[in-house]
Image (cartoon, rainbow, N blue to C red; front, side, top):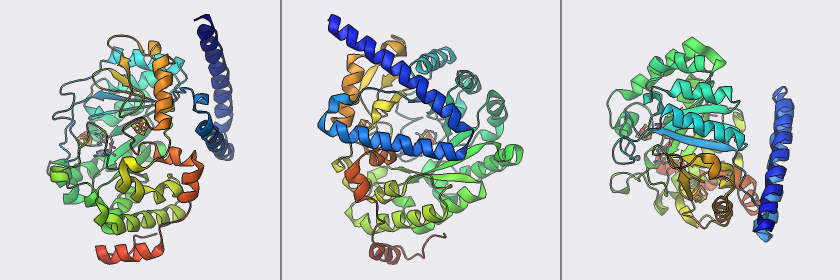
Length: 405
Ligand SMILES: C[S@@+](CC[C@H](N)C(=O)[O-])C[C@H]1O[C@@H](n2cnc3c(N)ncnc32)[C@H](O)[C@@H]1O
Ligand code: SF4
Ligand code: SF4
């Protein structure tokens, strides 16, 4: 018992010391893009070494929460085909301002550096600006993920609160968006909101488009439309893959969003076109080439992909206050029963971090880019593009020309 306490105390001291060094290095790196690049490379190399050692000695891995994702509300103003929010997931649940403030304060003390506020639709929460202000005042990197429809009404208060980063769910262009989101005229409203944001704040706000890769959006024509949209509003381009393990997502009516083996060539063509876009626009597409090349496998093999997970760097909080290690699983408690700080670095937290690495979980594609970068076998496997022959087959199947470079 005494030995366990000593070990915990030593771990806590080591954690605080390494956090202090990381913070100092990050502050220094912020002043120079070159230094930042070196830091990112160094962190990736360290992650690769750590995961390689952990293959032999998994117990070297300890929880190291760096990123917090909070679903501040389960309400939503859209009815997307692939999502249950706003209908039958945590119906009516919402976190209060005080709950979120306490959570953020605890998170900061535990070494968390980045917080994502989302939902449901976070712009529907009237206290979102106050939450953002609290996070920014604590020195947390802060961003929201939104469908963007209410940005015209909400952006001024959010900008005043210190928000500078927004990621945005993208579900197709024009009628495809309206069809998927279950509401008419919404795509036009989204365009209007983004025009307003850009005209008012120019490049002071960083915007990222989250392109949902599902059967209706995997054609090269759909990719081209999404790319043009991202260019028009000067957004970086990121892909989210249709989920197969999250309780709040679905694969659509009669599974219509889900991929089957018959989609293999279309998926390969999509990944190949995106990989070309990454090569020609490396700053707009931030995801690594290896991660892009792995897209078809994640979507076709599902939990058959055995890439160790580094969810030990995450914490997810639901709109009902439940706390999990990751988006999908490993429940650690509920902030309505005890504060976050009492759930972190416990035996349950340590075990969850280890189980995530060993994939004793539903095994989803979350964090695929960082997982691949830390796994030597996957880095080698996905270093090369999907074969060009597959792209040609995919193009014929889709009846399209390649996406613009
Ligand atoms: C659950 S939504 C919540 C925030 C906001 N309402 C929105 O739609 O962006 C967060 C992100 O999940 C992603 N997403 C939506 N439906 C998905 C699905 N069926 N599978 C995987 N990711 C999905 C989108 O990229 C979206 O940006
Ligand atoms: S994906 Fe986002 S916008 Fe669509 S229903 Fe879910 S929470 Fe709402
Ligand atoms: S792979 Fe497992 S631990 Fe990692 S995010 Fe998915 S469900 Fe969670």
